[in-house]
Length: 334
Ligand SMILES: Nc1ncnc2c1ncn2[C@@H]1O[C@H](COP(=O)(O)OP(=O)(O)O)[C@@H](O)[C@H]1O
Ligand SMILES: [Mg+2]
Image 1 (cartoon, rainbow, N blue to C red):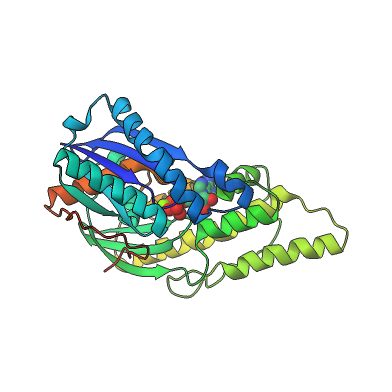
Image 2 (cartoon, rainbow, N blue to C red; image 1 turned 45 degrees about the vertical axis):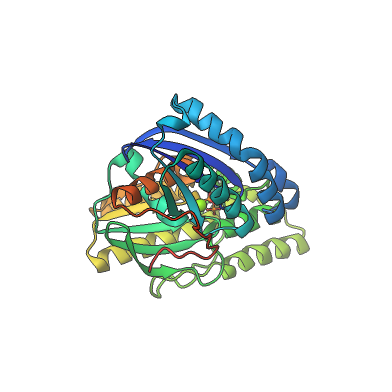
């Protein structure tokens, strides 16, 4: 069974094809980063228009990469939310058109669930119970998957998402957009202990707060500027990154321990962060937890994860109707 997955929730027009739930046949991502870079963030109207231009060429490219035609495809999966409403509508409309024209089942995918289920393309079908840290530009949450496809939220950010904090600090220190990969790169040469930035809410529950950290970094840079001191930006990036990573690793392992769950999934765009991956790997190993984390192209937004998640829906017989609506605020947990 071949499932074609369409992803347009934010600024990536992406199409992937997955065979029999587990095998990646193609994964094509047309990034709009250059279009949004001058604005320092995603402009929703620009994103929706670019999705329109890029949608069909990206579908074609994914088919070519997989060496198949639309007549070989068995179902069309599409991100129905969460995301930018105009951006989501382009993908969902395209998917409906393809499903209708080729008389194929339509599968409405939750983008956050797809981030988690991307893991199955490299590590096999997920076996619940497991705990997932889902960290991206729009989300930061710790969820437990007790059964296939059923998520229970244990904690979430009360203000900024992790990727949002990375992007904002990157912008403040004059790095390009998106900022996460830039901070990751700059931090490689920095000292994570150079600045003692706050670890907000480290001792409290499983929720996160990142706005205080962001303010602390900005305040320190302004103080240094006023004092005529030249900040070492690599040290700033490394210390900021370490403060985020510390709290995320600590809370994820604490939740896994309290829930008695020994498989941890790290998912979402920020899961591409090298320091987060390395620290999570080391801590999980020390705690006897199994860590599952997608390779980097499957962490950031992509169509293959949508196809994988859609394949799971298809296997469970959960198809969408042609009036499938987009939901910009679709939650992961019920
Ligand atoms: N190496 C990295 N380190 C930290 N953050 C990263 C890294 N790579 C990507 N990100 C961040 O991930 C976010 C994008 O996540 P993604 O899941 O692709 O998109 P969305 O948030 O739209 O679902 C951006 O905020 C980006 O800065
Ligand atoms: Mg995402």
